[in-house]
Length: 562
Ligand code: KIV
Ligand code: ZN
Image (cartoon, rainbow, N blue to C red; front, side, top):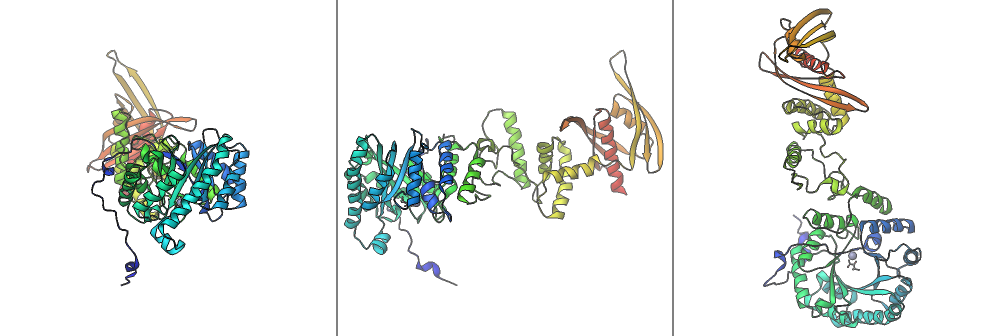
């Protein structure tokens, strides 16, 4: 057995005597910052071109994101040009702040100031790596050396910004101690405090301290402990906006962000659908909609998630997985019978309760809230139960099958799913319904018929049925009276070979298919052995639909016997 796990150095959690974050709740949206156009774009096989970036940028605006990191303008000519186009092309609304990233290196900082000329609101985001590992294996520097990189950069940025601020730019600062999660917390406090002082941060002009899990290396609760500790020790806490930038290496980016908010973070940097280096950045869609489902306004608009997904896939050439929370193709779909049943019951419960509260099992969010109400929630395969096929008949075709009929039709559908081994599309389910019920017009056929009806002095109605039936090559006449068409027909067939059924129940409703409106009747009969037989009849004539339904049930029983 391989012992390859032994080479790993486990994360050492901070010793916390008292932590307060587990008792907190998320009650309001954080400040959102999109890093799609930088961190996300940096991680693409083919980075976005100008047109794609512009389209993406406008989608972020439509979602309502007010802080958008547009790139790393000092990194390449392309990045620089995109920054200029956004500014000069008038793409940035007055209430939106663009953010630009730069390493804590003088020549790159100078170039970045050239890139942002003319912009109204800017966050200048600089960073250097602070973790124990990076100091040891990449920079070969001690803590003072690393601090000096940060403070020298802060000093230069402060100096260069005075003239652009004087010219009217609303320029703010952001500092990221990259790989914060692997940094000794007391040192993280020290370097961030030094940067705050160099940037002259005040409670009125707060500096964003962005604390990334550059590589997610610990459980989210350990990260929340670190964060609570960091915040409690930071001398100039009131001069800082605490921001998070979670990555997702352990698959816990969302949990890290949520626990981080509990631990005092006020701002989140994230990307649509979690795009970004390696396993990506934290997914802003999931974070926001998680809040939405807890009754907290995320202050972002994801009411047309499919449109956003389409733009995202086209521009990034990435795919949103079928199981991606809220956006994946299958996340509102139930195949399992018990889930389908519970969804049906929840839908019914909500209709009856009228409380307006969302109480549907297996659906944590109303698909309508993300514009997905027209997608099939219930899909049918061999895992599906009796209610699923009836649900499809109702929602896709308007047939409201009586409850008693669900098991029988469910069984017909299940035999077919077992036979084909794949999902059955609604059209195939309808076909099975038609073949089994509506098309059951033999061996007994109604050739012609007439009804006579009158109402007596007491208001009782009397109906007489007279008709010609055919069985194989034989035609025969029947006649009978009753208090309604069904009763009259039943009496008419009395004494024939087909009379060994008792009438159990009947349901009829109108159905519109295209511009054509018809009556559909569901008939429930029981034979002399106690077996139940259902039949379905459709006709433009509401008296004829149940007769066809009765014959459908009788024919199905006859076919079964044969
Ligand atoms: O993940 C990271 O640490 C970053 C920084 C540049 C903020 O992207
Ligand atoms: Zn990052």
